[in-house]
Length: 209
Image (cartoon, rainbow, N blue to C red; front, side, top):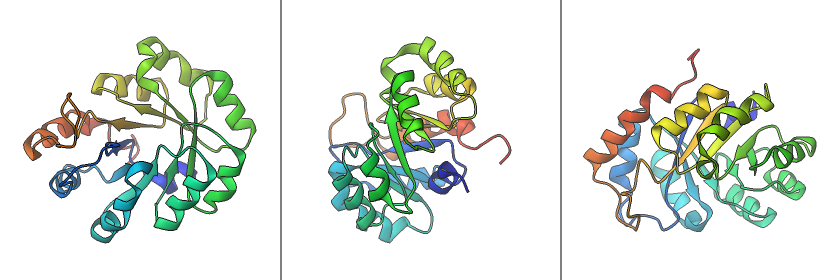
């Protein structure tokens, strides 16, 4: 089983919860499940929330921890029960800290991605993918044919589609689905979460699934 299959179970859209958290995240989580979005990522800043999320949804969703920047953070996420861990950088000690838990380390430039691969990364998270523009989305994945790349950032629907069409294996979407443009600790209303999910749903599954 590949690292992405182990982490995401075939889904190509990961929904990221915000760094500031939500006072009441359950309604949004329920809508995600109803709309078929079963792979979620909590930021490391909200690691204390993970046991509650897992107690309610571990059987129905893959719940990872992201924004981890060192081996200690990886170890803490693993110990808390994360289904996968992602990081914006690649450090060799992170791999050891992850153990058997799927780990996606990061890079942005071709040089950084190549360095992560040469250091043993099985998949690379391209982050922050939203800052590089549409030309980068179209041109980067073909430089690494066969390499599982995950584009991560505040990706609108059309940006996510460009990355996937260019060959990225998945996208990790921050903010766009769950939060209003103003951000903050108030999530979108369930009806708005549903509407935004429906914009991404055609991108959700791998073509063969």
